[in-house]
View (cartoon, rainbow, N blue to C red):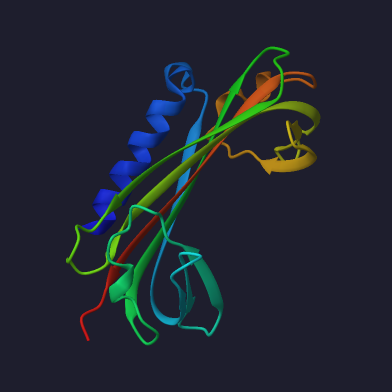
Length: 185
């Protein structure tokens, strides 16, 4: 059920940010999902961070939003079921636009006193200028507002790839979704 909620939020987030890309049918969305159990190693209530250890032993620090009301229930040894969803949407449009970026996010958290958990979805959109193309490998080298260059592989599904040229502007949308729910001990 949580998987459906996160995917719905991702789809909703993508459609709000780039309706023009959807109308052009020049883009494609690729999504992947990972589900795991993590164990809390440390809680810094002042900094509002929680350090967790994944099933393979890797440590990750999670920033807890100010709106989260149940941080007091999270202690070292607490276990959470975590689902991380990532999607990339690539849409192409002709032009010589200026490189820019923006970010939007939504957070839905457990009510005060409930089992700690919630979902967070962040959508990042970057307009970048095409610096180079490799038609054989279907890659494009881009320069965004924070510099670059960076390379992006373009799937066969993006039919407009054949229409872009060096100097055109492309839009890359990157969405991250995180759903967490504490496991009852």
